[in-house]
Length: 275
Length: 255
Image: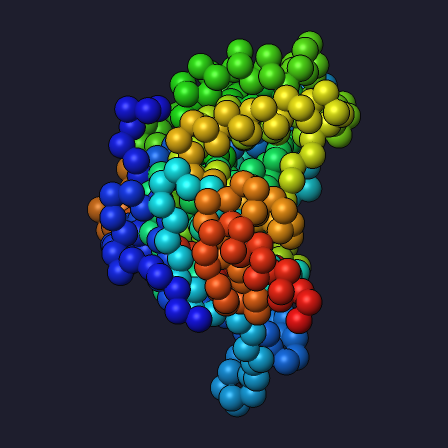
């Protein structure tokens, strides 16, 4: 401790808040780990089945949806595997953004008390979401085995598909949280938006269903369609996405993340003046 | 009133503030939705009232000083502390700070009720910017000082409020900060623990820390502080030795 050189903070010499925040996050990396741990441990602390719920949750939803919809969409045999693949990807996005919103509302109390990099809470929620995806892959693999849908080599590309989804979720969460600080109504409105968004994204139905709507543009303008498609291609379809498909997904994810980071870090200076 | 300050921080400076203003803009009517905001923005109907919590504050505190800040309620003392502890980013001006600032004003902020005392030590320690390894090495000391005993492995929600405060104080003071911020007098736990607290505080003060003491009490300022400033209406109205400022504060109160 004593050997550490004294840290100098000088608001006149900071190289832009977005870069400063990255430096600060690196210094506070242990805080990130603690927050991820806290979210996972505290969430299930009082339940008997604990972390098992992360696996039971998508399984339960999948079973209900399979019973209700498998006849409707005429995908009887493979429907459970199709749906759980989409659900794991969707849940990651929906939960990460919703938790980020909650954590901004909760964490804003701390914002007024002590200094810490403001992005820490949202980064940790995204990190926690990634851990949950890991857990959710267990029931997913079980369903694949159970229904005889083969897992092919392309599944090895899954980490990249998840990474792209995480980048998008992070960027979107940062934008959403910034908006919430200035407009508290966003928190009330978001659950409506997210359920509408889910029904507009092919999660529980095959994408062919929307191909004719507005010439397919209803899908093309939906960023999550492209990201979840990649996720489903490598897992469920067992094919490697084309270079173009990777590029589109990467651009969506990277641009959203960078814009989210810039907006959040620049606006977070004035968070102290609200709430 | 003219206040002597450096134009640039030097080797012995701990805190250096230059032309700091904190301006709150209060919309005259509340805007809660984006739609409302856009409509009003476009039609130019957003009206603000300006309120300066701090106005053109210049301050420099040298290392090792016990520096007092005194003033009436609403004079801007807490806002000044928030700027120094980097919780509030000033509207204008330059903030220069050397070293780790320990905001003792928020004991146990960030404790999670479902986590055990031990888990919360790590959570709180990392929130204060310490590394995991660093916290680990302080655990015996924190346990010893807080007198939590076997409860350390029970969730915090089972603690009494005194226990929570003791644990918070023990974590917050386990490290020797470079700059220690004291808001009023700390009273934690029963008399026995309070005595321990004040001994710990004195150790921290002696251990090379720069201390910023914020108070209403002219006696404390006169007794403890080597230097002090008097604040009123968001401005520093005078600065001098603890005794001088204590006298000017009393004069201000008499009007």
